[in-house]
Image (cartoon, rainbow, N blue to C red; front, side, top):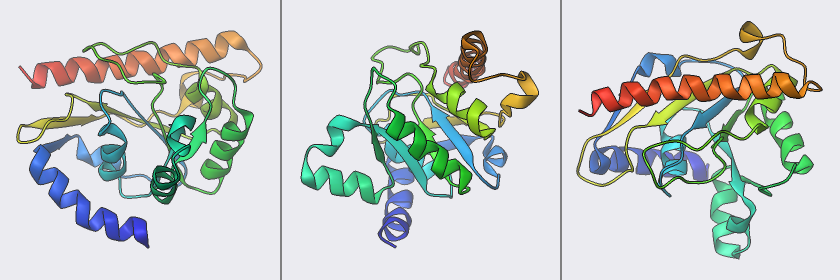
Length: 200
């Protein structure tokens, strides 16, 4: 209930202040479990990941955010769960499997951390591994700019990606995981180029 009320209140305010324009909005229509991925430029990115799609996004968030009790309460209420970066966090991965199998929306920033430049960092392998294991489709979203108030901020929505249509991959095959990861990075780069053309 808290999430729905907050979203109803916050969404129109943020869209007005930040001049949000969603490009290819029709691609947001989907049912069932979905992995939502996005590039990571600013601290506002998790908020807009929540605001872009209708279902509640359960976001993988760095463990450090859960150390402060008040912040932990807030991010947990917003559907986030902790992941320990830099290692294979089996607990977080199992939680991700559970979310997708129950038809939920899992949010991940595949770069693993924010980038201070206009170029994305190489993607971590986690998204590909989860997609291979669950068969869940992936919806890429590209934030064209670092969100700043009172200027136009486009958000580019990509085509949903069904990994099984790309490659019959096996989780046990390291090369399959790498190939899937590279494919996702290339699809996000396509959105990056579209965003740059749009922002000229």
